[in-house]
Image (cartoon, rainbow, N blue to C red; front, side, top):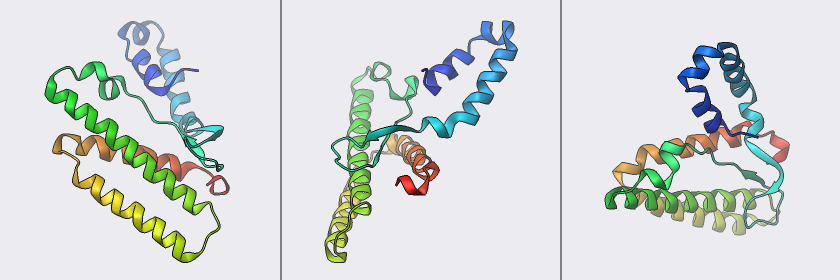
Length: 154
C-alpha cells in the first residue's frame, strides 16, 4: 500500500506522464476519490490510549518532513522545533479526544479542557516564524481528517 506522497512523486515522473498518461490520470482520480478512506488506520487506537479513539495518520511529504532536507544548523533547529510542535499538538489533541469520549463530571472535564487550552497557548507562543506555515498546514491536515471521520467513530 503506497502512501499519497509516494504516489505523487511517482506521478511527477516525466517518463510516466509521457508514456502512460492513462495510468497517471487513473491514479490521480483514485487518489482524490480515496483520500478520505486513507485517513484513519481502522481498528487502531491513539498512541498511549486505552480508548477507541482512532489513530490519526500523518501525511508525509519527503521535501517537507524528512530530516535529510534540514542539514544546516539553523534548518536542523527548525526541524527539531517541528517535531516538538507536532508531538505537543498531537498529545493535546489526543487528550481532548479522551475527555470527549469519557463520562465524567462537568468540573473534571472543564479542568482538563482548561489545562489543554493552557498547554496549547504555551505551545503557540513558542512557534518560530519559520514554522508558522508548516504548523498551519499540519493543523489543517488533521482538522480535515477529524472532520471526515464519521460521527459515531469519534
